[in-house]
Length: 255
Image (cartoon, rainbow, N blue to C red):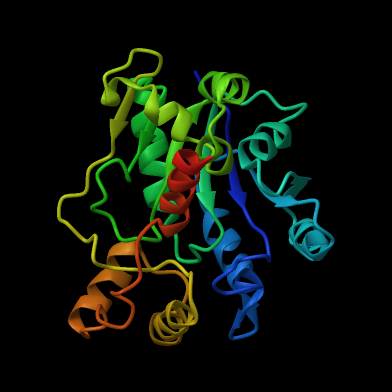
């Protein structure tokens, strides 16, 4: 039976490290547009929603998403879990895909593979980032709507509200709990030292270089191999992966 799948990408202009990053342009296209046009090639995704904030500066993201033919929603800046859940109002997907718009070269075939894996095995939650062997910037999470609903009703910690899925991960069988079933989508090799996400200006320089050299339609492995073969890993290797989430965890402890 065909299962309905909605992909939600979160986007805002208020990044602390690189403000306005998703609207920075490469060859006349914003990173957000490149991100969305790549994801629009997903065969296992029925609808893409751009979930931005109610902040006045983010009105442009909402308008641009609509202009490009995508669904858009505006919600809480800090309670991203609520923003995600509310963006699905009036929709009843079986599955939800979570990605972030600071990953302009996210691979649609990889997204499809992870959706397919989750659906075929009926896990509540699947990610290729439980074990971080894929490049940073190729992170995909797939979960049942029922799992998102349960998280929305029960999550309390700041990290669980700011990052959407920690409640699901923290209460999964992978962490010794039995509320959710979870599984890592494994990578054959360890590419965790590769960055294709945009957190700082040096990240943008690398993405711009990759696009100028290879275009916007290559696979994650094509970009990865190019970075390795041209010894580009040192450009941004001092940046901490998932730094925003680590900061949220510290806020949990410090109240």
